[in-house]
Every structure is written in structure tokens, then in C-alpha cells.
Image 1: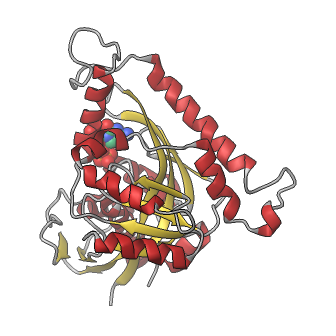
Image 2 (image 1 turned 90 degrees about the horizontal axis):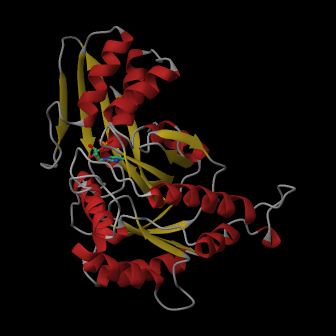
Length: 340
Ligand code: C5P
């Protein structure tokens, strides 16, 4: 028996990294968007005790460092229940790929366990567990188009973007997010962020450049401009002869929303920049918007039509990189499709 859960991926539409905080996380602003690509998790709870993680992919740790393990023990504790939890992960999403797979797997564990236990934790307990385990978990308690602030764990549902055709390129490059943040700090330091005595990227030091804070404010304004100006008029009626998909894509391009991680990841992996360039391709079947997701190495592009997306995926596959055509998932679709 057990409960099977689709563990959907996310992409980041823009990501502005702000100052390093006292807890050694960075303040950031991002828009998360869930997409249809997913792993499948099976959650079983039987007699006995212990947490077992099964996955054929050797890169997925079976021990207590696994985000699913960390969530499972917290769910049992919060629910005041005992049992032997077995989580079987059918891995299709890349590991350390910028698609939030480990975070999504962990939230799927939480949701699957609640079904198995026939007990729903208080929303605040669910959120607390997710926040404790990682910055990218809470977004999967919301789904659809989500604003992320703080260290990314404070999440707010945005009005869903319309469904986009999307090409998701997953090069065989694993990127460590903590390392990417450290590289960002080093870059900021080189570019003149004022620190006190030690280098700004040392763990105990904070970046004090006001530009880091200004960038977060400017990101918020950009997102506001993007979301409010384009695809809804003040009356709430969509623009452009009812084509809801067209306007937000154009606005996205116009406002130039960007992912700061590109500035530290692309120099190390120039092939990722090439992939982005190919997604933009030739006029006619070019991506409306293309970007690195999270700290990568996933690069995605939004396309006007499925044909254009398939065309672009073909070009990228010919370069030797895995490329899949998929769609963005609205909040409603996310929740409707979550349980298999
Ligand atoms: O929260 P999560 O486990 O995803 O974070 C992993 C690491 O990434 C943190 O330990 C921290 O080094 C870095 N990080 C950060 N700022 C964030 C999120 C993560 O510096 N907003």
C-alpha cells in the first residue's frame, strides 16, 4: 500500500542576493514557479521504528542527512506517533540541479506521511518543520507562482502566471549552493563591498555595502512592475486580446529580472551561458525568457508555443545536454496532481 506523491520541481524567475546575515544566510528575493517535471515518492508507515530511505540513485544519501529523513523524524515527533517509515524515491530530477528536488522530496514526505498517519499537522507546524530543514522547502507548501523573501523560506502566494511552455536543460553538472553563495560574497568583495577587517566572504563577516540592500528593494519593485503592469489591467481583465500568456513574458523581458547566481556560476561553467544563448536562438522561435534556475546547473526557457519549445530542446540535445519540454504548474494544478 503506502501513499505515492509527485514531488514537483521549481524554477526561479529572478533571484536577487542581498546582504549576508548574522546567521550566515543571505537575504534574498526570488519568484519561485512550480513546473510539471517531478520525482515520485512512496511513503509507507508500518509497525516498528526507524526511517529508511530507498533510492536507486547513489547520489541520494540514505542516512539522516537526507532532507526526507530530517522531515520524517520531525513529523513523527510533532504528530506524537511511532512507526517504521519507509520512503522510496523514484529519481528523475537532477541532484544539486537548482530545481529544488531535495526540498520538494522532503515536502512530499511530509504530505505523504500525513496521509499515512491520517493526521494533519497544524499549518504552522508544517511550515516550521519545512523552515528548519531548508530555505527552499516552504515554497512547496504553496505551489504555483510564489514570492520568496528572507533566506527564501518566507513564502507568499502570488497570482499564478499563466501556463508557459518551458524547456528545462539539466546539464550533468552538480553545483553546490553554499559554494555559489561563497563565490558571490567573494565577487561582491572584489567589486568593492566594504567590510570591516577580514574579507567579506569570511563566515564571520558581513557585507555592509548598502547596494546589497538596495538591490533587494529594486527586485521587489521590478517584480511588482512585472506582475502588475502586464497581464492584468486595473479592472483585472487580461490584456492583448485575451492572450494571457503573451503579456507577462514580454514584461519579464522588459523589466530584465535576473538571477544573480549567473554572475558566479557562468564564469566557472561557460557551457551554461552557451545553453542560455541557444535558448534565445533565432528570432521566430526564440525563448521569451531564459535563465539559470537557483544556483544551477539547470537552465530553462519560456516559449510561446510547444513547437518552438520542442525545436529549442532539439537544438540543445544536439549539443549533448539533456533537455525536456514541460509546462509551468499553477497552484491548482500543483495540488490536484500531487497525489498519484
Ligand atoms: O537552507 P538551505 O539548506 O538550502 O541552505 C544551504 C546553504 O546555502 C546554507 O547553509 C547557506 O550556506 C547557503 N544559503 C545562504 N543564503 C540563503 C540560502 C542558503 O547563504 N538564503
